[in-house]
Image 1 (cartoon, rainbow, N blue to C red):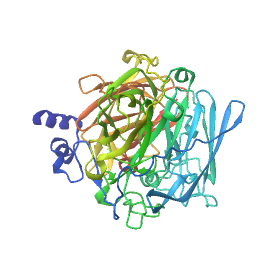
Image 2 (cartoon, helix red, strand yellow):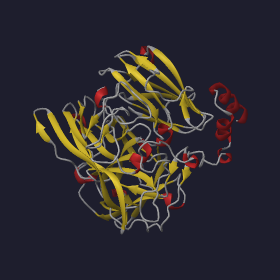
Image 3 (cartoon, one colour):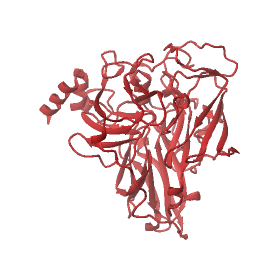
Image 4 (cartoon, rainbow, N blue to C red):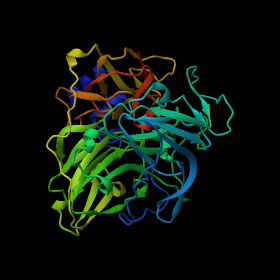
Length: 514
């Protein structure tokens, strides 16, 4: 095994430190394990007991309807919340909340969201998983400056193509796409990590006729779960190792945390280790890993008789349900799952564990099976029809190496990100195969498109690669091939690592479409 990995490192052309990390994860101090890249930042105050607070569910925004357009207003502002019981914490939140309010859209109906920025810094909103025109995709230099700010804003990456607004901006989403669990978050150049850490993230759910026709759990039994890790200072404030604590001009983290920031508190929908009473019936959970760098391997304790049944991926429904005993989920990924609590006795406590965690990060959320109830839901053997992209139709194949530079920043094919460079140019309608390789952990996210995983190393897709994806979990010393069609919208888009500390330290690249 050692010789084959050394050979693979020579092929990838990565540095000696990268190779050592791939072979012996414990020799590199910031490689937390073979499954985590980053360093734990301990909180400075006592952590609360687990499973003592109820699971909150983010409120759903009501739109103003005008023909086939739904309009929403969201204000980005400073607010005070209680993540930890009795401890006030200042956040940056959409409508002053974390998670932000949920938007529920219908496929094919245009959604327009007017974001007003009352924060002390610029922002840029990205609809993650959205098939979106370039001018509404949240390119990181398309800044919304704070209300009353002066323009132009000093930028670390001067960009003549940037479209800057002051105070507010409308984002228009045609949503010509399948039903899926999407999310929206800040994507400001160089500061995505600390901005999301402070609270700028929320759900955007898309529904369509195909999904609504299925007898899946719905209503109060269809619950989005945003899972993040955070750390807190002794005064209850969010603890993040920014070089510029005001997040104005100097990007990045202190040297110790450049490979990823890991927190010791697990929040689900903004509550620390919450609990939920459930009926002894099926529930649908829309799982989102919105952590900066932490991966999770989720399991049920005790196991559900029917397992964790995956029905959807980043881009919507799978063709058929897939049963898992554990579920690996990297930053940016979403999995829609069904858990049948009918197989447990009333009174049973069911705990979601993180098998990649230790100590306080081992627990996630707990369900209490409270009562018997009528269950009118079902789990069809067939959920959807998924178009298969044919590799023979690909116009070209590209090789992309995600690497660690000598200055401890991150690169794609040896390049740091530049707004001025088109790393990839493709035509509208082209189908392409992209091959990713690395000696570290990188969750790779593509804007504009969803893709299908063709292979991991020399085998087919992995256990969690089914359906349409927009984020894929690339593991150390691994190669992944994906296929995508670049359709509908020309312009400048990104692909990047969704470890947010890697992203903020230059691990992004541009795609010119059209």
